Image 1 (cartoon, rainbow, N blue to C red):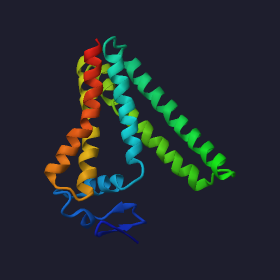
Image 2: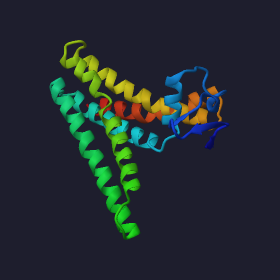
Image 3: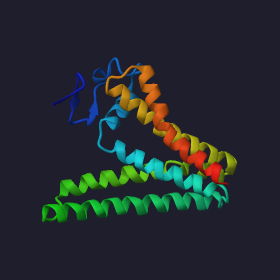
Image 4: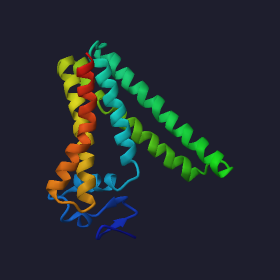
Length: 193
């Protein structure tokens, strides 16, 4: 068993016990354990990377929006293309750097990274599926997709600071600073049009 921030990771479950995050999070339950497990994984940076790409796509399509179905297709196609590019470039990098074929474990790790990037990019698809089903309007889908992307990036900044031992105020300031990356993208698009 590996020690993780005062708690113990159970390798058979792949999750971090709640005690490992006592004092960091105020809520409990299985969702918190799942979140804690995700936040301690190497895929966090890949999800953030994908979320920024997805946000950039949504912002770029907003002025002359295609149909909701086309937005879904664009996001999913981009998620697949970028995910496969990440996978391929990482495997080729291993083979050229180590002068051998990638091992099964290395390929599995790269596949996890690929899935994380693809998830980050495809995250806004949910809102455009709702728009295609006429559950929400297309303009609302764009608004929610943009600001949930900014919120997701900010959440990761907050979580990273809290898990690094920062207090709530400092963590909130870090979340705001990181969320400004996404807000800058949204604001830049508004300034240019």
